[in-house]
Length: 93
Image (tube, rainbow, N blue to C red; front, side, top):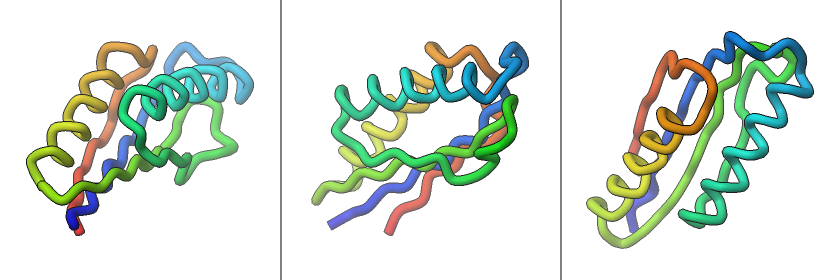
């Protein structure tokens, strides 16, 4: 079994409150969880309104499927989040 962990650090230059940031994150989280059946958590910067670090985890018996899902999620983040991805890392267990 292959476990894939994706961490994304994102800057939201147009967010002016925690409420705005959480609205953006919840929309992204709901879309990604529904589409890819992954686990999602905000890992850091919970009280910063222009920055976040999120973690997304998926697993499968084939590494290429895990890699494909995580790369699709990166693409979704780049296309649909009104922010700048500062750091993106994928780890496998």
